[in-house]
Image 1 (cartoon, rainbow, N blue to C red):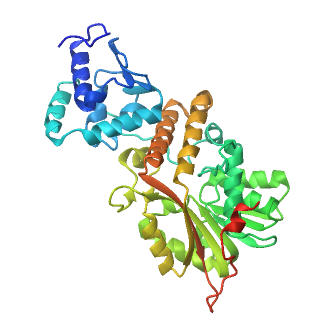
Image 2 (cartoon, rainbow, N blue to C red):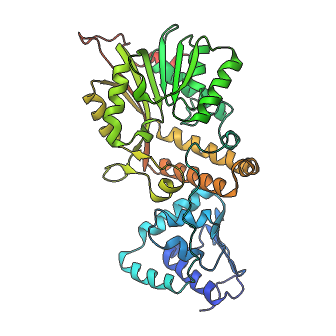
Image 3 (cartoon, one colour):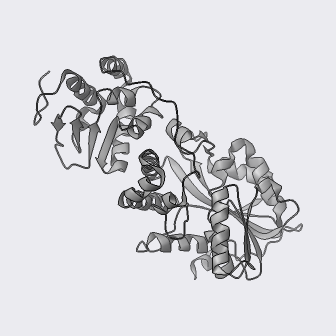
Length: 413
C-alpha cells in the first residue's frame, strides 16, 4: 500500500493502522482531524483540524478497538497507547459516530485487519482510584472556588462558573421556598457549598450529610472558618441513619446516581420520613436518555475508572418510585444543556490547570478524569444523558400545600 498523501512512507504496521482507520471512519477519515503515527507518519486534515489523533504505539489501535468498546478505547487513552490533541469532546464524538455507523458487514473485515496489528502487552489490571478518592487540590483544578461538583445554572450566559454555581444553589433554595429559620437537609452535601449558602443568605438552619470523609472534613473546616457553626452543620452519615430527625425542606444534588435503582425505594422512603408534612424535597439527578431508556450502570470505562457505583435511571422511573414512597410530584425541569455547558467549563479548567491536577494526583488520574468529563460533555450535548430537578412534596393529611400558583416567584431574586 502506498503512503498516504502528504506523509512519508509508513512502516508496514503503520500502513495497516491507516488502513484500519480508513475502514473505521470511511469518508470522514482525516476530514476534520489529522493523524500522527508512532513511526512519524502524518496525515493532515482535508478541512479544518479540530483535533489530532495520535497512535502512540504500534499496538495502540488494536488495543482501542478490541471489544468491549465501552471500555478499551478509554483504557488505551489512559495508558497513552493512543492520544488526542485539540478538541477532546469532538474526538469522542467522531469516534462514537464512526463505530455506530460502521456497516455490520464491515465488522469481520475490521476484526481481520486488527489481527494484523501488533498485540498490546498485558495490562496490569489496576484502575485509578474512585470518585472521591482524589486530593482536594485535584478538584480545585477544575471546579469553581466554591467546590460545587454538579450542574451550574447560567441564567444569562455571561456568568463565570462560580457565579453560575451560586445561581444554581439559589435556584434550588428558591424552588423549595426556603424561609429564615427553617431546617433544611442536604443529602450528599459535598464540600458544603449549599449548606453554607442556605445558612448565610437564606437564614436557615442548614444540615448536611456525606459519606465522603474528606468532603466532611473540608466542609466542617469551612463552616468553622466562616463562623456559622450555629446555623450550619455537617455530619459524616448515611441517609438511612437519620433516625427520627425531621426537616422542613430537603435537597439532594447528584446523590441519586450513587444510590442505584435497587436502592431508590429505600432512598425516597428515607427522605419522605425525614420531611415534615407540608415540606418540599428537591431531587437533582442525572438520568438515562439513551434509546429505549432502560437505565443501568455506567459504561465500562466510567464504571471501572471513575464511578463504580453509578447507575442512571430514566426520570420517569425515578418519579414513579418517588410517588410510591408517598411523594407528590409538583415540578420537573430539565437542565441538560446547562450541564453540558458546565462540563465544558470543567474541561477548559482541566486543560488550563493540567499541571496542578497532575501534581495533585498524577498523570494517569488526570487523563482518566479529563476523558471522563469531556465524554460526559459530549453525552449531555448529544442527549444520551439528561439532568432533572424534580420538586417533590409531602402534603398534609388533608392534601394541602402552601405553594404559589405559578413558577413566577422562582425567577424573581
